[in-house]
Image 1 (tube, helix red, strand yellow):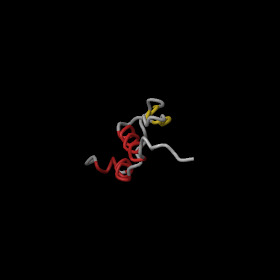
Image 2 (image 1 turned 90 degrees about the horizontal axis):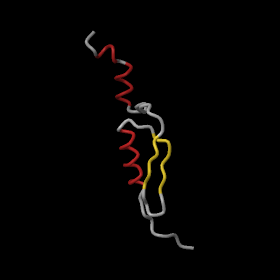
Image 3 (image 1 turned 45 degrees about the vertical axis):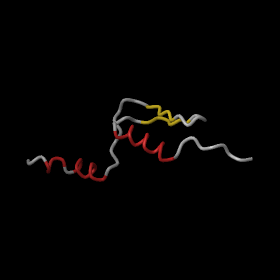
Image 4 (image 1 turned 90 degrees about the vertical axis):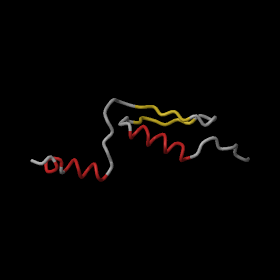
Length: 68
């Protein structure tokens, strides 16, 4: 049985998720309906912890970078 035409691409989902995470919003679930509509459901108001290596380094060395 052949599949139907794909209505979204992985890159579309990745861009949407990265945008939400960059805004500091926690993602609870991602849904994609048969028409390709991407729905991102958020959870909680807590900011997402950064996984960026530079941000982690800066957090660890914050007191040293403040000129103290």
